[in-house]
Image (cartoon, rainbow, N blue to C red):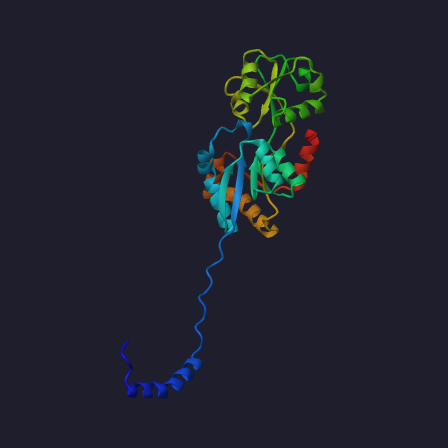
Length: 289
């Protein structure tokens, strides 16, 4: 390495104190501004029950417009999970894995509120009901006339079977004592049984394709049960109460704009209603769950 000339060394020695003083008087450079805080990541589980036939990819497309509303309202990143396994849905709510759950059957969100510290955000319109269907020429005039007859319901452990049994109970018909009551695997089979005179009357969900199309196909609706909460949306304890209130307000107002109505139509409901936890808890009592 070449040596510095003696004259240069002397000049450097003279300037060194000045440089040190100048450096001391120069304000320290401000640290780089912190990057904006990352948006919270939320998991949104959707269950369409046994009557829903969509897969995960279809669920993502179907619910993305609703997810956009949630993300904008909560300033969060939301991932959709299709919860088709009811056992997994219950377990995940118990562990509070899901931050938001929108599910039918409604007894799952209801238990989320009662047992797992979730809070109700909204329910969907219209409410859910058990629809009792008969053939057009059926001699049955009222639901009480079905006592002792051939009654067809969805599989015994299903939500809608419990729902319809509760309505029959309130009308004086104890399903456990009906000798001709039969359970079938799917609601479509209930419709087939009634249509083909295998059963005198069948109970299906008001939101099922069977109920919605029954009269169009020439059948008759004999009785509709009391209304109960449908497709509740619940929020886990990690979401602050203020955010729950904001989300509730945003969803309830969706049907007041054309853009919002498109979101609602896409997921097959008329609108969102702001309810209270009590109605979901009362549902569980009515079902005996």
